[in-house]
Length: 346
Image 1 (tube, one colour):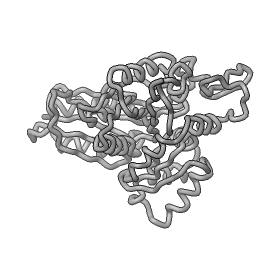
Image 2 (cartoon, rainbow, N blue to C red; image 1 turned 120 degrees about the horizontal axis):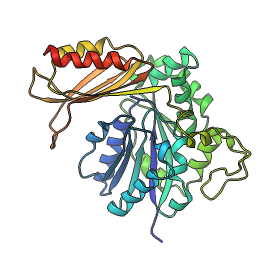
Image 3 (cartoon, rainbow, N blue to C red; image 1 turned 180 degrees about the vertical axis):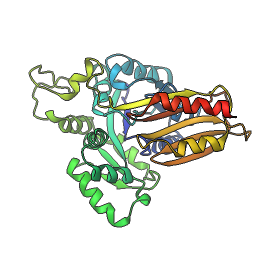
Image 4 (cartoon, rainbow, N blue to C red; image 1 turned 90 degrees about the horizontal axis):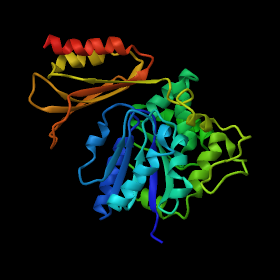
């Protein structure tokens, strides 16, 4: 029997650093002479993070929705195709920051895939400053989602510790440990971890630790009716993730809104920066590929929690002039109007 391909799920709220970790992991495997593959999910219509993955890395995208909507069909097919067409040594599933990782475990650990895939870890990246802010702010839907992502993890990365006071790290770790007392945790800046971590996780025997821990933290560790896939099949047991398969009403990211804006022409960089600078606090993540009228360069734009960054890029293909905004309960109509006005101001 052919050896199963190890799978690592990368979780974490929007802007926490998942793609940074993914890029480092890909480089590590390539330097080791191995072939990584990526399944990347975005809520928007354009996978901008996926554009950062080099062309020689097999990648499949699932856009305009959550993996949980399609775990009974598309996810399994996409993973099968990745293996069949590319024969990778490892697969990374990077789910959108608005997703609860428990929602994709069923798809990855489906019994029909067990001969081909082995779930090795659920790695949750935590933005230290945002966890601190949400922890102090109370029980918002965003914080509850962050809590679920932490509970599901088999590995924790407390990232961006350079953005908080050193004396606050211990209390943050304590708050995280109240949610997940067992997963190993590493404090990092820019997700700088020892990449041999993935080798150790991959070499670990079986998938039991990842699946059992995640399902236990989902609230049904005492079920005796688990099938071969590790999923409880007793219809008398109420599980939160069961509701996810019956429409969007119960999705953990229902409160998250996504607006994708395509520009018909280059815009003024200063006017765009001014617009981003006055975005409402409800918009907590944005990214884009932007052409500006006052420079010949193309820029990758990133925005998370009041901080923006622009990086010059030289893509090999023609890319759309586009920006994606993610947040809670903001006015899409107002934002669309302000972005459209930039094209007319120029």
